[in-house]
Image (cartoon, rainbow, N blue to C red; front, side):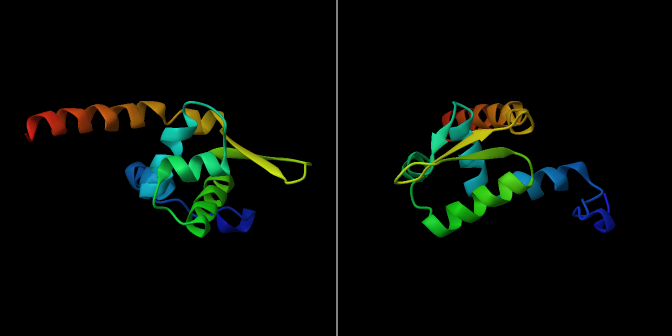
Length: 111
């Protein structure tokens, strides 16, 4: 990819590319929550916990720009916004499953 087409340069290393897209703590938790289905902003904020509204908004926007999720705004008062994973975002499920499995093994072995 090149900057002439308006696209960001991606790292040569595929692991670095993956980390660039989901390496943030909040992004992984957003993915975890959206793997079970569409969520509203408030549901994500409540589920994730200590993330500020500003940071959550920035993370969601970045993930939308990178094609990992979609944002749907409903013309209602008050406005309703829902977030869903794209097919690309859903393709990260095996990575999150592996992280979950590793975490479970670590928790039981470190007792």
